[in-house]
Length: 61
Image (cartoon, rainbow, N blue to C red; front, side, top):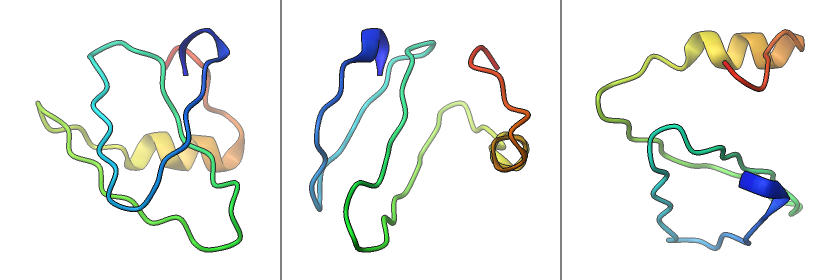
C-alpha cells in the first residue's frame, strides 16, 4: 500500500482503491486466498498477472 502502510483483511472485507492509488495484497495465512476484483472502467488484468509471474512487472505499470 502507499507509503509502506498495510492493513489486515478478513473474510467478507471490501477494499475500495481510488484510481492511481498504490495497492496490493499478500496472503500471510496458511489457507488459499481467494478474491474478486471489480474495476470500472473494466480492466483486463491478464497481462499484469502474466508479467508479475515472470518477474517483468514494474511498480509504475
